[in-house]
Amino acid sequence: MSVLVGKAAPSFNAKAVKGETMIDNFSLDQYLDKKYVVLFFYPKDFTFVCPTELHKFQEAAAEFESRNVAVVGCSTDTEFSHWAWLQTPKDKGGIQGVSYPLVADTNKTISNDYDVLAGEYANDDEGNLTVEGEMVAYRGLFLIDKKGIVRHQVVNDMPLGRSIKETLRVIDALQHFENNGEVCPMDWQKGDEAMSATHDGVKGYLSK
Image (cartoon, rainbow, N blue to C red):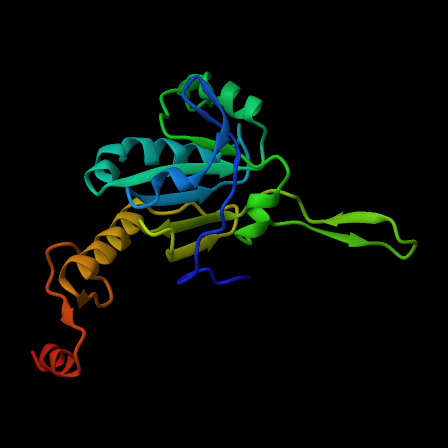
């Protein structure tokens, strides 16, 4: 798996859906120098674990907005599948009410560039093109700063849902570091004491 942390987030232009609106040319470039981005991938529309995650991201919309973070979802489904799912009520397995953009990675190129595509192409003994695994995305999540640099990534296997609380904690840690120049130790939470990035500061923290 590729480690994208510290590198520019792969750029893309793709179809997307936001609410009832189809977007022909969606790009993360719109957020450069303006917002942080949480880009998360999920396997499929109209499934089981996926809607629990999408609804939780929506429920935390105010938390992300207060941190100046844009949330963007992405799967290998088409924009028409996204649109239909967005129009389906929650009690019928839909995600009606989700207001952030859902990107349609129909050609699998975005998932491939972020290295979260579960399947891969291969050739059999006769040279015929085959597919190993299912060509859908793992549960990848990428925190991208305002300069377009990936600062955090996590990838879960398909049965394993993610944690909104952990995503927000990592955002808080990044923003604390940017604002104060202090690094954040394990299990750091917003409001906790952080550490000076200098050698003396680390020694002082460890001696407490």
